[in-house]
Length: 162
Image (tube, rainbow, N blue to C red; front, side):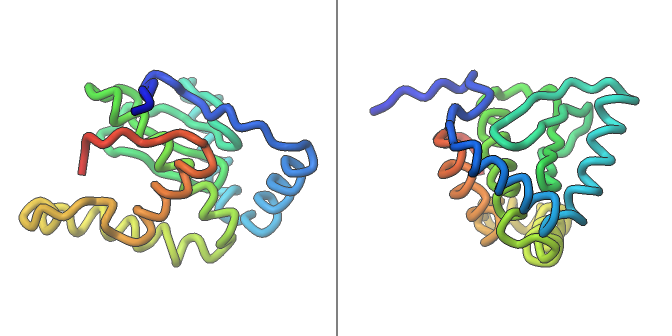
């Protein structure tokens, strides 16, 4: 079995410059509404609030002092800065990166197809999930984000959480 380095912070996938150009062209046209909101929040967090941030594949992650997990808005990912479980941080980066790729596919439909169902599932069904021992990743858009995060980062999530 392959040993997984949970301290790894960024995918090492190399793609062609043409792929890079098309990726960002699509993100800044088809996905413009999502990326404008994410970009403004990113600038506020990094420039005004001086929060730590890093590049992760094609995305930019900002670490925030909040209790929530992660939030992805196109090219911009917002995550809890200090978590007692480094496996959680490792897995969440990969998961949220999967949402970046969902946005690439869905563009302005991302809010309806992924963001809204995800927000409702996260915020309104926590007690249901706990009572019925249902994984957070059972919802279609969350399991899809895991799958695409692993595929496009070439990193495997560590199984340690619901």
